[in-house]
Image (spheres, rainbow, N blue to C red):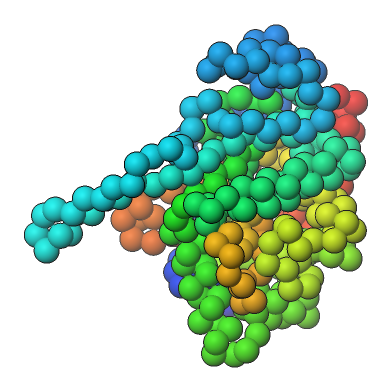
Length: 350
């Protein structure tokens, strides 16, 4: 079997799912939908932006004149803390079930500058973002009804982001969501069977092979996972066993900030556009238990496929059967490795 030529399946040990890979399909012409390249030049401050310092938000609250990172409770939160406990069961054999779900949703402004992204912020500013993520994880996780803290960023209109101001979100929840729960289940099973941490073993293997490694520093490695679904999906893994942001040393926080900037620049440089993506951190639940089997990691899930204007759609077979991709993980990693770490807009003097 030639993984670069023959259709095949790849197994994801984190989720227990499979992805279908069809490398021969990269030769097919594209006559489908194209997206508008995201290279708009934005002002440093936008008086109409809900997230810029000193502006009024859509919910009527005023932002302070913040000069660094800034977080606040989401004015239109998907989860709220004050929900009365309740549940419902109905239908044949109680197959219809529902119960109340409490939580706290926060918005994190990465920078007061409206025109920046994580890839274009300086390292001290990104370090401040990492510190805020860590502080929020600890503070929210300390609440007695919060058992999971999901930190994430949706970047770009293609990913549903309604405001270009550099920001992300945090959803702190009473219940462990499905995907982190599935990852935890499989990591626990692996730990019980082998006595070692799944993602630590996997990283050791990838560092030996080198084929899917993109960048690395003293504390973190960025790679395209063997089982990647999205065309240029990458995963950020710590070199040592770390279950959450709370366990990072000061130097590891600096190294994580550096990795975030470097991979952000490479994604942007790939198609010379503000590369859209969804990014999230998976880490230990905050229910007070120990999780020696769980390795903290970050997922970057970017949708662009062939250029700045061609998106990978999850439709048809993907929605009805299983994920499928054309470009292999090895090809994606090689393309990302070859890119410059000087941002294309900086090279153009923008």
